[in-house]
Length: 133
Image (cartoon, rainbow, N blue to C red; front, side, top):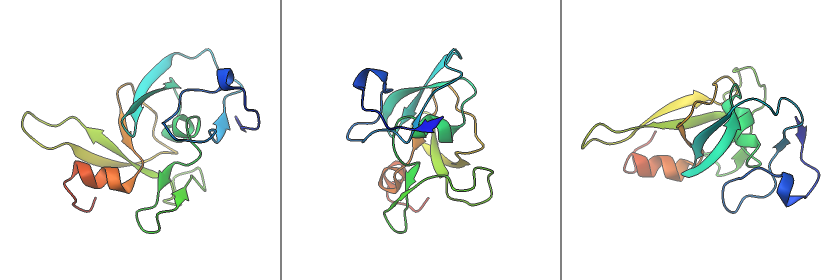
């Protein structure tokens, strides 16, 4: 993978609305099976075996927005030690129940079909009715 430096719209993956060019562009291993997951409510694709960090950064420039400073954050250490790539994954609610959010390290979690990943603190608060997550 390499940071994106070209602007050809056809070669860019689908990404969340309002996002600038993604941080990463896939250069190799392009024949793996596609996996659809949801990034802040939008259906997007990754490839089987991608970490959430790779999957997210091929669609947008950051992994999450800090709930403390409101600034964009991305993975720093890439080995699960720095706490910079935490995202939340929404689980399907039980009948009549509220959706639950689980915190995951994007750098060490493999993307799974149907995952619902929340990268913005405001969206996480909406899932939990304003409660701190």
